[in-house]
Image 1 (cartoon, protein in one colour):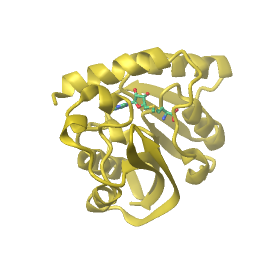
Image 2 (cartoon, rainbow, N blue to C red):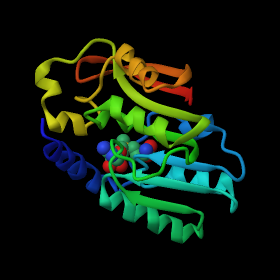
Image 3 (cartoon, rainbow, N blue to C red):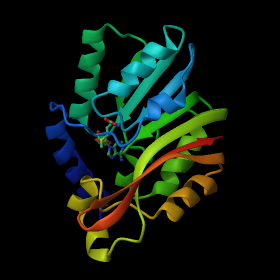
Length: 210
Ligand SMILES: C[S@@+](CC[C@H](N)C(=O)[O-])C[C@H]1O[C@@H](n2cnc3c(N)ncnc32)[C@H](O)[C@@H]1O
C-alpha cells in the first residue's frame, strides 16, 4: 500500500470528523500521563485537540503542549478551540508521526490516543517518540491491537486502515515495537477486549519510559 493512498483515506475520514462530536479516543492517556506544572507535552494524532488543550492547562504558563496531526482540518479545529478557550501555551502542527518535526530530548511526556494503528511503520513511530523524549521522559499510548494477525485482504485495504482496523498488529508485535525502540519499564495500564468486523481486538493503554 502506498503512503499517499493511505494518507488520502485517513484525511478523507478525519476531515469529516473534524467538525463532529464523535468519540475518537480509545483510552485515557492524559490522566495516566500525570502532567505537572512547567512540563513540555506532545500529543501525537491530536485530532480536535481536546486532550492537548487540557495538557496545556495542566502544564500552565511555564510549560507548553504541542499537538501534531496529519489532517489539516483537525489542526485548524484544534487551533480555533485554543483561541476560544484563551489558551496560549499550545501549538498545533500538521505532520506525520513517522517523521516528527521536533528536535531530540525535547519533551517530558508524549501521549497518543488511538492513532499509531494508522501508521505503516510502527517501529519508526516508536523510534521517533524515543528520540524526542528527554531521558526518563514518559510515554502513554492507547491503541487498538489484535489477538491474531489480520488476513492479507484487510491489511492491504487503505480504507480499513483509516477505520482503526486494517493497520492493527498483534499485541506481541506492538509491545516488541516499543521495546526495540529502546523504551524501558513497559507496562500495560488497561486492557479491554472487543470485537470489530468479526475479529478479536484489544484496546490497550501502555506506559513506558525512555
Ligand atoms: C482516532 S483519531 C484520535 C484523535 C485524538 N487523539 C482523540 O483521542 O480524540 C486519529 C487521529 O490521528 C490522525 N492521524 C492518523 N494518522 C496519522 C499520522 N500518520 N500522523 C499524524 N496524525 C495521524 C488523524 O488525522 C486523526 O485526527
